[in-house]
Image (cartoon, rainbow, N blue to C red; front, side):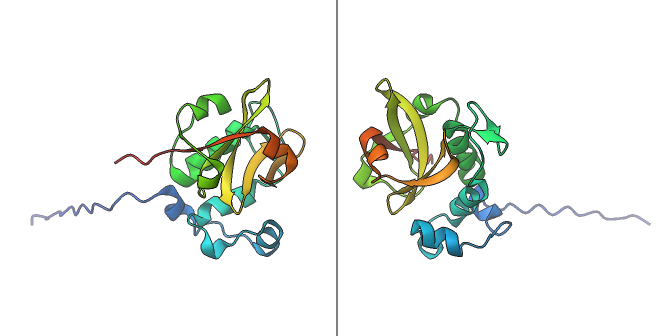
Length: 167
């Protein structure tokens, strides 16, 4: 008796990392959104918010790449990797070279925000969340959410940056 083996191949469209993983981790956001005036219902990419929430409080470590310690470019790279499946390499100045610069008024959720803090050069990066809020790894406080209207960030803000989707 011969056996007939049939293989069925199904091709599914590639889905953004955010859509694949967004159901896996949904923490309680009541305090988070109330405190930072961000709404999960209006988020374009809710998974970004889940990832940021998961990293809040991780301590700062220069060149760190884990929750035991992470720096600003490492944090933004982690967010882009897990949410958008994009690999970013290098420090904040290196990352800036790969983006389309945008003005503060043009920022959209998921854009990067760059700051010239040290010696007039790009030395800090965060990820924009909307409502003038951005997530970043602060030297003094670790991963936090801050407001672009705070005097410190107003003073050092340089540009936003957007990675354009490739066809």
